[in-house]
Image 1: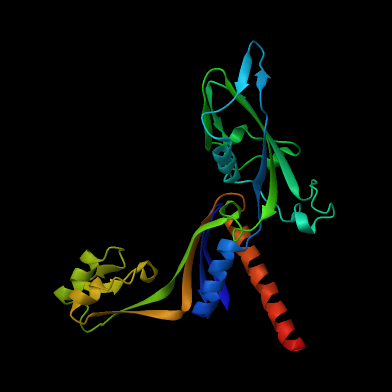
Image 2: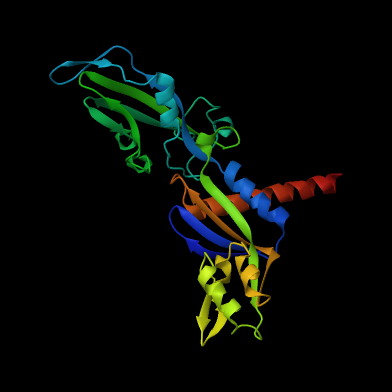
Length: 276
């Protein structure tokens, strides 16, 4: 098995899994979707009653139910550092909550305004500010205010979607597109360059040639019109992966962590077979 990085941006990645199998490809996909640990807000405390401003008194109330507001906060991407934080159940504090397993945020805003994710202030290191600063949380009118303390902890997406770090994780078999050189100059073959929705083909010197094989979506329209000049198949040992993250972890961190988790699971399974 070999991994070749094609694109690796902050929140988007494209890589090729080579010399592998559909079983391994699906294991990587499922691990990226459900097994990557990340921080997310799990507990929200609301201040009830009045809040004093500089010139007047505000009512601690919003147009949304507290449960909806808490859910929105839970889906805000919280920065995650696996070297700094661990699961509460594995922490030396015994799950009571400490700087090694929790991040505390405060949210204190007065209307009229739109409360954004960037208004959440970490109680500690400024490096722990949320990644996306412009997620709308709630709209406050004049006289309304919100005072909240929120606690983020480590979790996995298989328990709740708020702990999902990677999204849109998908892969496809490597397409294999071939042009019969004897028929590459025929009008039916040339037409493939016109009808291909992904721009896989180009015409050079009056002959059809493959320009971007990986762009093929396996629709096989070219086979239908080429009269045998073009054949499309798949290579089930190579896979093209595409995915994105919510910003709590970089695309590279998600891939590295998924491979680390799979490696440990494989070692554990082999050890179990040895004991048996």
